[in-house]
Amino acid sequence: MTATPARAPRLADHSADRRMLLLAAMALVVGAGGAVGAWALLALIALATNLFWFGRLSAAHVAMTDSSVGLAVVAIPVVGSLIVGVMARFGSDKIRGHGIPEAIEAILYNQSRLSPKVAILKPLSSAISIGSGGPFGAEGPIIMTGGAIGSLFAQCFRLSSAERKTLLVAGAAAGMTAIFGTPLAAILLALEVLLFEWKPRSFVPVAVAVLVAEACRPALVGAGPMFPLAAPLPAIGPALPAAAALGIAVGLLASLLSVLLYRIEDVFHRLPLHWMWWPAAGGLVVGLGGLIDAHVLGAGYASIQALLDGSLALRVVVALLVVKAIVWLVALGSGTSGGILAPLLILGGAAGALAGQLWLGHPGVWALVGMAGILSGAMRAPLTGALFAAEVTGLFGALPLTVASAGAAYAVSVLVIRRSILTEKIARRGRHIRQEYVVDAMELMQAHDLMTPDPATLPGTMTVGEVLTHFAGETAHRTYPVVDDRQRLIGLVSRGDALAWRTADMPPDRLLSDMISDAAGAVAYPETPAGTVADMMVETGVGRIPVVDRTSRKIAGILTRHDLLKVRGDGRRAETDRSRFGTADGR
Image (cartoon, rainbow, N blue to C red):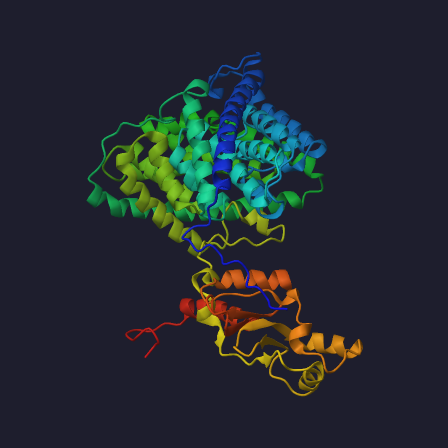
């Protein structure tokens, strides 16, 4: 029976289809849910702060530095951390840590499925941790919470894993936008850290969710930049080298923080205690840090604003840089619940403020530049770091400086340490993540670029006996295209077919053309992308795909597994083989 070529793939620059519009419509709901989740998280943090530090039931936003609890400053973080440890032990251990590695794991290894338990316990545990003095921010928890909202909503419908991922990330980006008012940076964070792709199917719904959250933010959280900064900028030209130098410094700092974090985590793993008690031990260090300077407690948003305003004394800036780093690393290494963005902003801002003592200009500008650099170096997200710092302050004129700092910090970080603070935890669980996005070489090549032209064929007029004799001897291939008298493809015949016919005592005078079935219908055209041919091989189990002319249906070539593997080799050589002048073929 004549094989019918498979339907030609739709060749286009992008793989978008109408389901993108469906996901965009669903993202309207996810974006609103992420915004409400951010509002609820901030309210829970305020409620916990009032309960722990002021002994009252209130959701009003207050500063821990205004409380007067005396030596209880040591005990309160311990109590809060102990509660978090119990919640993790008897609720879900997914609430431990800052949330972004867990979100990445859910995306890459759990088909973007998060449980309702995580959606409830993560914000609650983070609120208790931060409200009791934990030196964390709300961004990691809201990324996990918003992601859980998107994932749970997606699980209510019949969607693919990739589509669930889109809505999970849309919820995470919406939550970040609602808290910080940084829609552009939230989209970039999704692209650089969470999506592991750049496709219209994911970009458009994420953008929709982020814009919905930004529209809801004034009513739920407040309008305007979270940390407004109106400061005169230094002359950009002379300031760019200084910004890059600061980026190098905070890039090294970010690398050191990542290494120290996991060294501290290793220390906790060696303790003769169940991990449920580790957060309480970390809380003790937090409380002692609070005795030194209360500014290191909690999310520290007021400290970030003070760094940008340039209103902190030099002693407080140094305390924020040193003591905040210690208590944050120990608390996070203990496995409690909290985010990394706000602590990084404080540490980078403090480093920038110190550098601002040496350089001309408003110290808040250099604090801003330090924030951009440390975010980029720690999270390996240079575009996010550069734009977030400008967007969260409203000082977009500083973008050249933040780009210089973020780029330098990123370069230092990727050269100094192998993994970021986000991916090291995942690697320690035995999973390797590659955060470089490249175009699949198989999608750039087409069948006619790789096929063997004019392949060896067998005529359909051969008899079964002749085929058995052919395969009984030495043959160049295990599978051959079968053609008619006009070289048009009929199908494929393999050594396995011949063995089956011999076992079944097939009449030797039957024609080969009568024996070919529809099972040999996997056919490519010369313009078919190599990736599509690879998919055919996986689906059919056939290792040799015939290539036919679309008009005449004559056999034009054959494409094998080995041909496809050569694409990867060519890509590797393009990365490693170096030359100077010459033509495209190397001469």
